[in-house]
Image 1 (spheres, rainbow, N blue to C red):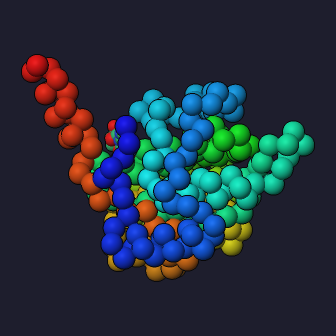
Image 2: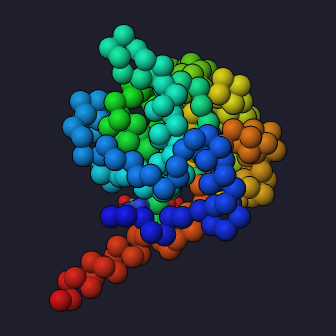
Length: 235
Ligand SMILES: Nc1ncnc2c1ncn2[C@@H]1O[C@H](COP(=O)(O)OP(=O)(O)OP(=O)(O)O)[C@@H](O)[C@H]1O
Ligand SMILES: [Mg+2]
């Protein structure tokens, strides 16, 4: 299904279009390799949650980011490009607008395009749960691994209960990725002001510089999907 709701709005759309054009990227070009069989994508499907197994990054800014990251990749020994330093995305929208779908869609598109990719995905809540100090687990090592991973999805930033500790962990993680310029896909339900209040100004400041913003301002797709199912059941 094409995403007709997931369009950047007004001035942001113009600004993003300008940025993308300045980088030689046509924001309207679709990502075209979804139907190509890709061994890397087939292998990765096992790690993609069932809900997002067929996700397609059909938002123009996300699709353009995929092309930019794929184009910037260094060629490996087998000739396929590997992911390099690059920009990140901040995917913003209310509940059910398709943020997680776009994030996994982006990973799938990169793999389908033949990009050699080591990636990890976590929700912010799972991240804090994993890193919380407890016997037998090495939170520092986990944080180090996430900080260095070539591509990281941080889903639902700002949705977990905040504390000084979550702010410190988030700052350390984002700061390392910011410093190393590692592509990161961040999704959030919060606008920048609320995000700043929730996770602190140091994280918000870094995200503002390192990310292109993707605003999903459509309806809650879950409710649309449910309504469509009811409609089909009624015919
Ligand atoms: N572009 C799309 N095309 C088809 N289906 C989509 C698209 N975007 C989202 N969906 C579907 O809509 C539903 C909600 O999407 P998703 O879970 O990505 O929303 P979300 O913005 O991450 O919500 P939340 O804020 O609650 O985490 C899912 O069933 C997803 O598969
Ligand atoms: Mg989500």
